[in-house]
Image (cartoon, rainbow, N blue to C red; front, side, top):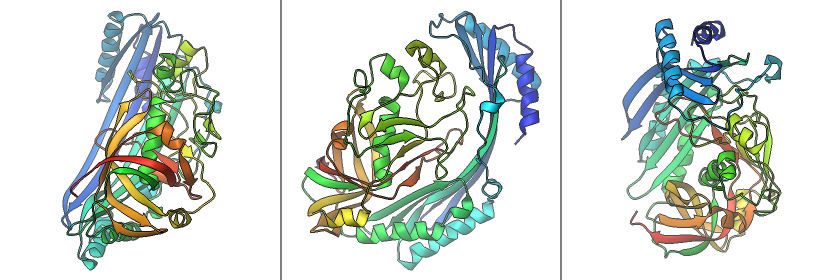
Length: 454
């Protein structure tokens, strides 16, 4: 990490070497380490660090963007010149008025960095894997997965005086436990590695694998289905990307077009984008340096608000809500801190009140079919169970589904009390911890369209 003072020096190089009317500079400096294991052995241990400088310049309403992964002053100056050249070939963006002008006192202090997590070493990750492997061997299972941790340093400034800086980190673990004909899965991500219990995660994956041994095939059809938070999170994420996106709304491509202020889902559903939730991956500003705020998206079933960045807010004649992604971003603003409020029952009671149904651990390979109607498809994976007479009786072979998210949320049969953080898998891009906080949900007549052979 380079620190706030050094980051400002690099940004000042860009700010002082432009002829543009306005300029915005984003420094994203990060490092991450990963230990991956398969067949009860560590097979990969990698460390990566990189820096990027992204520049946006504006001449009138012509916007140009360019980036480099070098912090050398010469390269930063060259990147500014490239952005200026690109701007001259762009069409005017009628929605552009200005980059945000933010005073430093507008930013809220947040704890986004835990030193112990940043310093979680190769040896410590290997020891965590050893715990997981030992538990797999104890039950004659084979385990696969990864343990990773990373740090992101983000500094955003523009020629109007906006200057935002923060450093954040996270640790992530995913585990597959595999038996002869069954698998169990867990994943967890968090800011503080001291709160990560690798042994408990492994035992939870073991329990899934053992419970789903010798799975039976059931006929496709409509079933009362309970979705654990990992599966339920995908409902919310698609809603966030496609329904509450201010750009899609203004273009008439959102489900909420013409429905804002109306009841769209069951009144037990309240969804908030909350960047200050202590159990989540809080962060104080978006990628334009605009301060984030708590925003109610659905209040007791009624669609209340959308998310905006500066461009979409101008078009809608509103103010930015602090949801800009890193530019250039053709998709539009997205809520990254979704929270669904819990209900009145625990998951055991939800199961006990189910005569015949299905319990789903997670989905695999989900895709949106119709973004405007919010129809999506995918399949279950790594722990799908049959519920009979209020009890989980056996594992079942995975099922494919095609469903509509809004219709599902209007067939709601229950919401669990406890909400947990479902961390997004880090993947192969920039390391930036994010996730969704939500309970388990129970939906009537969920449509499974076909069965699989495993």
